[in-house]
Length: 491
Image 1 (cartoon, one colour):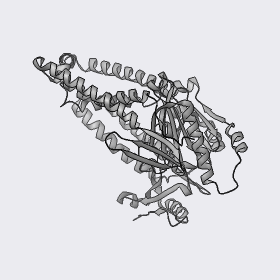
Image 2 (cartoon, one colour; image 1 turned 90 degrees about the vertical axis):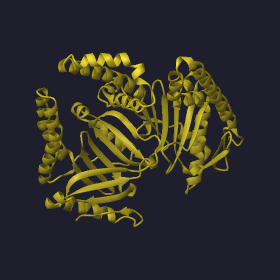
Image 3 (tube, one colour; image 1 turned 135 degrees about the vertical axis):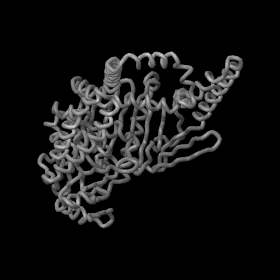
Image 4 (spheres, one colour; image 1 turned 30 degrees about the horizontal axis):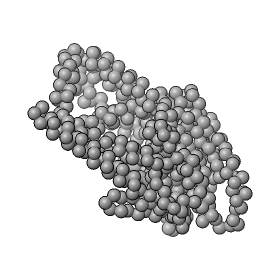
């Protein structure tokens, strides 16, 4: 299959053209707006010249972009002026990600990305525009070839493979009510705030004062209207941002489903941009069960998976169940993955509660005192944060813990959201134990466990563990292969 060089669909030219224009949008704005009326024509000429160069380079890039599978390698050749070659051995392929952006969906095409073990933050191979049937054939062919290369026992016959390929088990499909709760309780508002922060970086490049002078003058009028008016407008703006985030998250996780097929998870999501990723069960490093306060009160949680070298960290590859009832997490996880969900953990010692309260009191005062001094008399309302931080401290104490069950380590902790992490012993890269001066006085330590995840690694941290309990975890891990990294600095 594909022994001859193949070329992307011609729509790849449009996709690359749109990508380059989007990356240069700030430059275009500067060119058009930056010239005075007398020299405006030169701005338009420069704009046209850049567009022409982008079009030509996109066409040449498409003509020079070839791919093929040969000699158990996925081979890629590209480059206009400098020809580049990339050969990826099939046995190193870890994850295959299929997605459909708006342009791909218009032309009934897909984008295929291939990630390798220990890969960087981006995909090793990216085919921006191919037919869906071809993407599925590539995915199927790579899976079969990898199985043949890695197999140590008897070869599986073609009939057995074909029969096994037909077996699909849908283990999760998001329901409309769950999609609504996911959207309403997500932190999608952070995306909107991040966009605002990003635009502020162009303050020195773009003539914001000229473009938004009228808005600035209206804002000055608003400042004179009083604190009540400002608060009402701020609340209204946050409400609008929340509604927009609900729409964005709903579109992102619509049609979310998880299928199990031949030892692999196939995760699909998205309405406007449909994405699909295939992850081998063998590549899963850890399970993370996250409960933010609102979802916890409603009896729901989100289940993440940590995979080695995921180029889509934080995206589709890391979400197993966007929203699932806590009562069925144990059944779902244990039926699919080689992890046991522990319902009873070893808790922190009672003396850790005092440290949580002191720490949270200090944090609350850092916020409350400046607010009172700067925003009198309304700032006094911030005093309500002090008992809230005390309750948070108690929740951090109550929800933290650890458990060893055979070759499985479970760690639980809370900052704002509660996180429970399940890690197999063979997947753990390092165990680290350390203590501050104040912790040593209370015979407490901080316990950290790291698994290979993404570009760097995923570390789980439980603060104020009894030093004897930490020693049990440390010794349990230290009995494994000496090739593993072990750290311990309890002073």
